[in-house]
Each structure stands twice: as structure tokens, then as C-alpha cells.
Image (cartoon, rainbow, N blue to C red; front, side):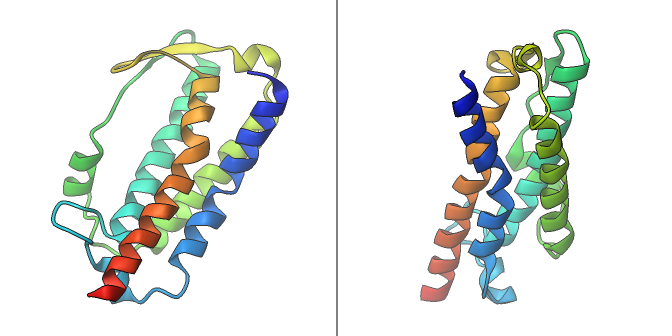
Length: 158
């Protein structure tokens, strides 16, 4: 991956919190809690997922940078949603997402070429490195911001 591509992905990563918070703007507590369909996540569920995912992602990147060939463990997002009280208020999770992302963005902006090439092994997908990490998480928040907008649109139609 060249530096221009990295810079674009880092910019997208840094913009993730803004995209999510903008998607949430103006929604009522009732709208935030509505699940668009059975088995689908409400906007609140998505925010809690983003916090869990971002904290996990932050540790994954740090392990890739600080350890030799770390094993990056997968996790079951639906199990997290079922066990971690996703019906709780979203404010703390929104801030956890924000600050984990901001802290990690500071690290991304300082990486050397050698650090960008560091690798580990993901428990489900195999070879997993810093560049793959960035490709995954650069788009993660934007995808979920779209999911939040769809959930809120569905809630407003009900």
C-alpha cells in the first residue's frame, strides 16, 4: 500500500466519529431504541457495537505494533450484544468509541514504513497486518453510520 492510499484511509478513519455522531443527530430516545426488524440492531445497539469494536481494534493495532507475530483473536459481535446490555444508555459507549479512535489515530499518523509492514495472525482469517487493520477499520464507522441512518429511517416510519 502506498502512502497516498494510507493517508486517504487514515483520513476516513479519523472522520468516523463525526459520521456516526451526525447520523445520530436529532433522533429521539424512542427512535434510537427501535429495531428495524427482528434480529436487526437498533441505532443504540450499533453505537454499543462500535464502542466494543473500537476498543478491540485499538488493542489489536497495539499488539501488532508491540508484539512479534501476535495472534489476533476474533470475537462474536452478536454474543457481545446479547451479554453486554446493549439496552443501556448510549452516551458512554459513544464517547468510548470516540476516544479509542482518537487515541489510535494519533498512533497511525506516526507509523514508520517498517511498522506498516508488521503482521500477526487472525484466528479466523489468517495473515493479518497493520495495513489490513487500517483497510478494515477505515470503513467500519462509515458503514455503521449508514446502518444507523437506515435504522432511524425505519423507526420514523413506524
